[in-house]
Image (tube, rainbow, N blue to C red):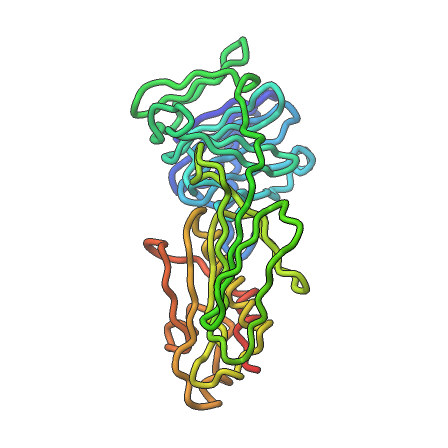
Length: 337
């Protein structure tokens, strides 16, 4: 549980499974704000255990297992409980927030069991810092945070205190060269480098069972933190992510023409979306099962998890534990030709 006093002398109480609570002093009662599963703008979880008000009077709420919430100042002023959510799909490394602090520039700093994160509220850009950046450990303690009068930020963890000046934190602005290779089962690998004037190409045909793309950034200072922007020209496919998704083309080898190239690209994009949504630097692959009846294809449901459970598709992944699916995207990509 946490207790926070805002700039208007109001008291907020964060509880475990009791929602977000505001104490109304003149009436000596509590106003409860609860998570509503049917409302994506409600507070994301009833364990709202970390609270802070920023200089522009937005209220930030950290939760257990449901990410970060922002109650914008304009909605707070009107008493309308509409929240903006920040989760792993927005770039956070985890879903549990241990500590929240605001620096002098207005950026939000978060502690978790996966290091520290710096969030720009305007652009929603997130930067992460862990033991590879000089922090002694990635595991921090709930509520162990302090901003000093001089603007230093202090976070407490399993390995002691981390004290730093956010204005002096350096960011790696080096953009490394990129190498991309592409191959099919019948053609030799073609490799291209960023800045290369003449690019090689491959021309897959119906006999090719797959097209395999690989890419890497030639920067080895902290390769696990490299992120890539990729796009397939001609399709609305583009992500900023370090995660990988892939699918075989044709998707169903028994009926190779059942899915179009565009649909298979959509399936691979769905795999990449799942990987990104469930954590950076993970991979997901989707494969078609041996579908022998047109009725099997027609019965495919838009819910990808049901499609997999029914045996119409198979998934391989590096993700451990339960997987979150995106039902809207799955409805468009897993459709019969």
